[in-house]
Length: 108
Picture 1 (tube, rainbow, N blue to C red):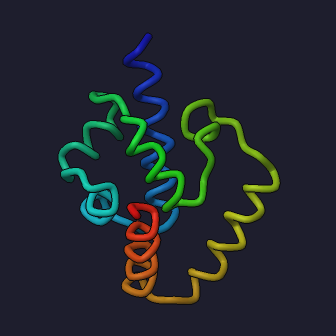
Picture 2: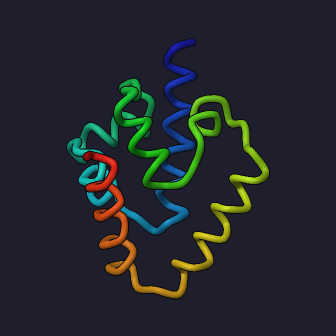
């Protein structure tokens, strides 16, 4: 059962990452983990740490409820879509710069 939960959580994280056109190496860098560790999380082989959960939620603008339980807050979903619309106009490099800044702020 734990493996199934890890697979579901990992798939949601993978979906979030792909929705913002980010590769595993980029997302792993933001979370301060290796690409291999992220791959294992996305494939359900490893559990997600609380620290990584918080970082992913903050960087990607999603709630922990969504990642852990697949529950979507409609207000947050609308905010996420708005952010996605704003960043869709910019090159991937610009998005990565913004995400790095956000990650630095969160780390403080």
